[in-house]
Amino acid sequence: MYKEENKNIARKSVLKAAIEALTLCRKDSTLAPKDYIRKVKAFYRKDESDPRAFIVDELSEETIIRWE
Image (cartoon, rainbow, N blue to C red; front, side):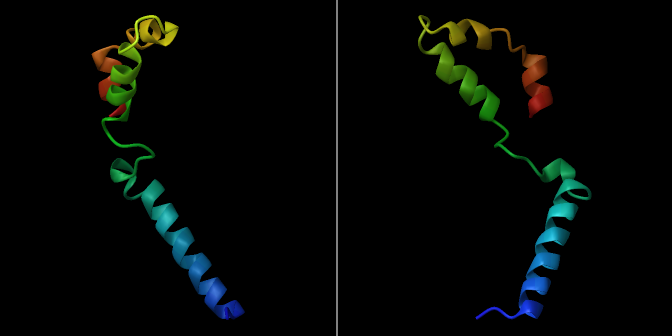
């Protein structure tokens, strides 16, 4: 059973980790894998009848690199 003190310790630990991930370790903290945009582009390009196939063609290499 949780006691209030245990909850407070857990909250502080989670908040500390989140703040560090968003500040000190920001470069290494991502919401998606590095190759995610490339995989999405490849997925939509498989079916040329899908209008999104043409949209993803607008993603330049420069833009993809910025996402990575």
